[in-house]
Image 1: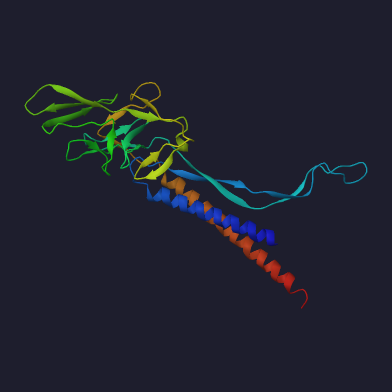
Image 2 (image 1 turned 90 degrees about the vertical axis):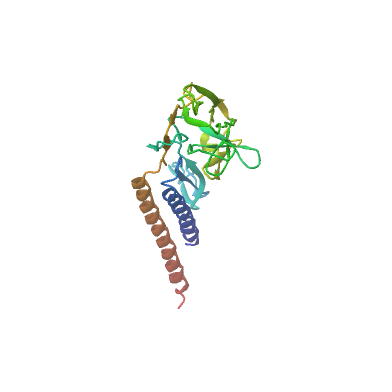
Length: 262
């Protein structure tokens, strides 16, 4: 009965974390380039009361074991990097990646961070930055007298200056990809950080080999599907209810045992 109390409590904690994760997915349904995540669980240690193969008589053996588990634990949040639906913005500095890859940006500490959020701006120096002011890497500066900006599917950035009919190249947008993108650390602000689990960043040109091409004037929407998340939330809620009932039932059994002497 005491074991059931702890098992139910571990299940309630696990499902609470599951609800927290689902609510975060729903909260970011309109976040550009957001990638949904799901919680993964594992069962805990088992207490083996009778081992499989142990003798039940002189000539017979037990075909299966008698064991009782110790509950559940959350072990990981697996992030899904499926491509979200592209949304047209007609903004020349918005870029969507139509396949694998991450934009590279320089954070405040001078380290490289990675993002699928391609909604870029121009700062006071003409440098292409994201909404937080992080500079695109490699850096690209747009001339102050630029009349039009064009970004090709392979990342070449060209501008047409006022009074000129010719275009000139001002930079190249490179992409990074990882052997295990799920191993990236979520750093907030639509950015990820490289870890030992993700492996070293592989830099390449958009639209070549395994890198996705770029689409100017589009952004990638969140890959959260409302219906899926709502179904997952209902399942998590029911699982939480069931675990709470296990705790309540165990408490009643303990109460009954305590009252036997009366």
